[in-house]
Every structure is written in C-alpha cells, then in structure tokens.
Image 1 (cartoon, rainbow, N blue to C red):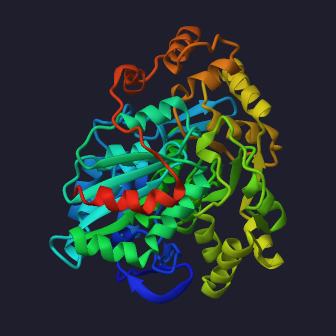
Image 2: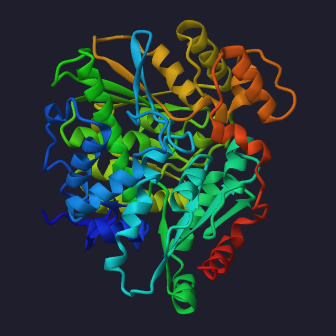
Image 3: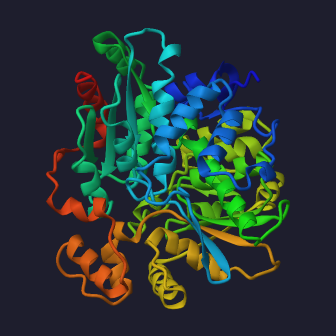
Length: 496
C-alpha cells in the first residue's frame, strides 16, 4: 500500500513514513498525518494468544507500510526485549472493579519507553532516504520530565545520530533531572532552560523552522534536525500497540468477548498518549470512550468542555510535571481527523493560537469530539488523596500522573458495564517525595532517602536503575535562556 504523510496544515507535500519520521515536523509547522489511517483494519481476534512483539509487528506493518517486514522485525526485536522488566511489556492488572495498564516497565520507568525504544530503530532505517550518504541527524527534544530520559536512553551512541534534550529548570522531579544529567553516551547533550515546558517546546518548533540554522547545520557538518517528541509520527504510532495489548489481555482473561467495547482513562498533557487510543479505534479496536485526565493545568479539560482553547492562563507547577503543559501539540492531529482533514481550518486555528493565544472550534466539531472524548482533572489535594486511596483500597502504588487518572476515574459514574482501563504512565519511585508525602511518611533528606522510606513502608522495591542514580556522576549542568537554544543546538551538532 502506497501510504503517504502530509502536514495537518496542508496536503501539498507528501512524504513516505520514512521521510516523515526523519524530518519530524512539517516545514509549515504542522504535524505529519496520513489520510489512509483506518482504511486497513486490524482484526483483534487474530492477536489473541500472541505476545506483544507479534502485535507490534502487525500494527506497525499497517501504520508504517513502507518499512519491510524484516525491517520491522529487527526494530521490534531490538525495542521489546530483555531491557523490559515484564515479558508482557505492558501488563494489565486488576485494580478493584477496573484495570490498570502498566506502561512503566521499560529501562527508564516511564510510558515513553514504549515508543522511544523503537524510534531510534526506525530512524536508523531512514538513512537510505537521506539526500546524502554522509548526512547525520540531530534529534532535538523538549521534555516536561519523562521524554528526555527515554529519548536519551534510546538514542545514546546510535551511529550517525546525536540527541539534544532541553528541560525546564526546576520544573522536573529530582529523579527525572538526574536521569537526564547522568546519561552516558558520546552523542548526547542535555541542557536546562529558564522557563517552562511550553517555552522550551515552542522554541524547539521555532528552531525546526529556522532556515538560517538549517543552512548552517547542513554546510558545517551535513546535519539535519528531527524530533523525538510525540510531534514525530514515529514516536506516536508505537503507542497504538498497547491499546490493542490491553484489549487482548482482557479477552484472554475472559473479562470481555471480542467486539465488546472498552473505555480508557488516560493521564495526558500533550495529548499523544490518548491520541494513540484514537488511532487504535480508527484501526478497528472497539474503543467505547477515551477520557482525558488533566492536572491543575487543565487547558484540555476547558477545551473539551467549551470548545475554546486558551493558552493565555496561569501556569502551575504541580506534582505531575510531565503534564504541566498549556500547549498540547498532538491535539492538532486529533482536530485534523475529527474535522475530516480540513487543513484550512487547522491552519487557521493554529495561527490563532500562535498570534492571539486561543482558538474556538465550530460547535458541530465540538459535538463530534465530545461523542468520543470525555475529560476530568485533579488538583493537588485530589492527587494526594488518590495516591493514598489507591494504596488503602487496592494495595497498589501509583505516581502523581496516574493519580490524576485515578481521581477522574473515581468521579465517573458507571453508566454501563463497559470495562475501564486506567493507563499508568510512570513508576511511583520517580516521584518518591510526592508519594511519600501522600502516605504521611517523613520526606526529609534526599529523594533517595524518600525512596528507601517508601520501600520500607510498602514492602515494594525501587527499580535498580532509579535507586542507583544516587552515586551516578552528573555530566550536564548547563542552564541557558530560551533565546540561546538555537546556538546550543548548533554547537552540539559540531560534535557529530
């Protein structure tokens, strides 16, 4: 099948999936989409009894058809192997009268590993489509906490590729920061920036559109830019797999029959994690409802409630830093599909967001969106209570992001017997101080002291790669202004 990808803001330029993955962001600032999504369905009954790796091969074969079966097999083998703590990759576990999908059993203990263990494999196989055999790629990423480490771990020492990660100074957890600043690898760069995640993400998008910088990178060292954020379609599509995996696990334990609908509750700030659920539905998965769970930065809640997206609002630093986002990039993809591919509308909405800080969608479009997506949010007290309640009721520890979803789930009336699956996005040991405080533990000392107290109080064990950060050497201590990010990328590219 000759699937092509184009911008959400224009269909004039069409690329293969290899080219779209390598480029990351469209030249006009839009995100790559394909109008073929959903033309080929996946029969979920054929996946029952199969391991995660086989599901991945099937799904990626549909979503990225210009990669050969042997290439995808190599990518899947490298991405979903012994580096995972659970052979199911994303195991589904009972949680009272619902279920929780653990997405944090990868090497960096966050759901981003599902995609960022395989994205470097995709990227390595895009070189054949490059304009020059000597061309190198600098992967440029802004992170609100978890993407940075997962991307660094995936791309470290990948030939022909460098990676530069920017994170907002003082706005990630101490464990998240150390995961990034201690990263080994000859091709990695990590830098804090003065501002919040939206500032960093906006600057990254601006860097992608900087023609002068692009010329400098090409002339000095044959370097082109790409992204590991969920703006990259190669980062998004692997996340579709775990929705099918959750469904198959429900079938295998006789909780549902093939064809029954399932509801998913997803903690999300940048909308990529839940957009993957929409993609799964387009591929034929019986998804009944997708619920967005936000933290106090509830811009998505307000949008899904009113149809007005307004980024001109207070920014709150919360205990769920990976969701502290006011500009939700992947919402643009959802709007594209829900508007039946109206690129003119999308371009107009995004222009308004950039120029006046807000946009309003037509009532008919909002009604269509609300037919599938629902929403809720949790403030800091509710997050803390959710962590405590989940432990007291289920003897299961959740991190503050998952706690937003747990709170929203607890507030949702059960209207049907449809099974509900809560996506758990990170290990609670990435946020031991927040979780320990919710439990009423002593949170004095370092995050590692908090880890030990949490472990002792609950009888659980901190992942070795997190606990071992205490004595790891920090390599990256730079802090720069937003305006200096372009120069930093230029200097980092000279090392390739």
